[in-house]
Length: 293
Length: 299
Image 1 (cartoon, rainbow over the protein chains, first blue to last red):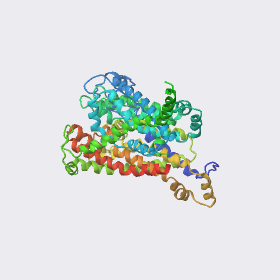
Image 2 (image 1 turned 90 degrees about the horizontal axis):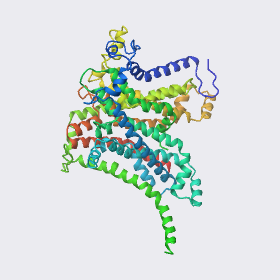
Image 3 (image 1 turned 135 degrees about the horizontal axis):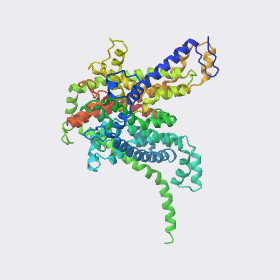
Image 4 (image 1 turned 60 degrees about the horizontal axis):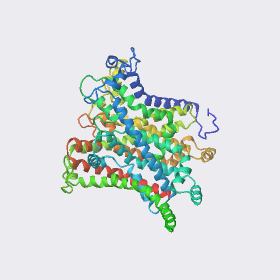
């Protein structure tokens, strides 16, 4: 009983197809379950969580955990909720994303259209910097931030994320511009267009997709960062991930699981939204970050 | 004044030839200082007796000799070996299976792909929070099973010194296997259908089709998956902090958590620096040959 499928050369029997669908749905459940359960339990009163079934829908719906996580929950020593830290993360992510994307675009342009001796070595050096374990730069970076009076500030974190984001953004734009016809650049040069004119008028107008990839990927990485945030900005300037970890792992008082879940979903919100709205570019970023062309 | 225009034009052409390098120069300078200079500084510190603050008192290999005698470091290295092997192996198997099955003209493929991949957009802190609670015997999976009437069901890995590291594997696989799926799916979509049809006409079974033709063609995807997953494994920090905090005791310590605690909380900066150097060397051993090969191919 082969199912005729003219487009796909591999044919499978009907019984096999049933098995395949079951397998795929089972895994869909596996991926959805932890986050879904968190969502359900974030609108339950605490008593229903500690004394009840985690999969059951709330008997009594409440948005109190969300309000508490946002504005009154104890983060460290202050009962401020996660709101100020959410704002910190936004203030940190946007400048770092914009700066690193701009610099990456120019670097990619130079490395593909204005090649010179040794450019591959420079690109190799930039590329390797994407993959270093950041533990190797923590100690000197802490010193430098101290010397620049930027320790424990959002500005300091912007600088750190900008510096270590350049490698990835350069990689994106270099791979993208490598496929851009160099003849167009040469023709414009003969017509007397300068370095920036060519970039501005010829390359940039067709860079939409790769700018989206760079924005989305940098935003996801920077928003989700924990190591730099925990090392350089604990306290008032802490980003969302650090604040969430403080909320969840604080040892004082009753563990308000429902508040923790609401907080976790808030921390996941922006990147999840980006993924749902622009998943296509997200996947492309993953690919060009892994399969270097 | 007359020859100003001449030298002006000359200056302009010279500027045009130097401009590309000038534009690239700041990035190169930043990279040389903040990446390679910092690496050199950390390597230097690993040969000094730095404690709370950097010191420049040379002590030779002493930190490395001490490092490998510290019990917690050996636990961390052993955990990394267990974690990396299982994490890479299981993610690859799940990712490959999902990709092959999704490639069979599946209805709602787009929706399924979105579901498989969304954990990759989350912070490891969020993933850790979700799984920490899901695996907590008192309120999570165990409690639910028992409430459903399966009284004897127990699942206490996260509280168990011997088993806790495997809960880190579960959460990490949950986070990244969808990503591996996406890489393999892209590889599968790139295979020429004509070859497959020809093999089928020759009477090859599905099993042989995959084993002899499709899987060998996925070699680049296997290699990329291995490189990306192993570098993620070595860098793993956030997930352990959020899921187990390195505990119970230090049963789930990894090199990254060890480095942080020795450098910033125990004030043993020399030891911390030496552990960071070992981490860098481990990653470099995998990344440098890979990047070298990729860049050479490109030329």
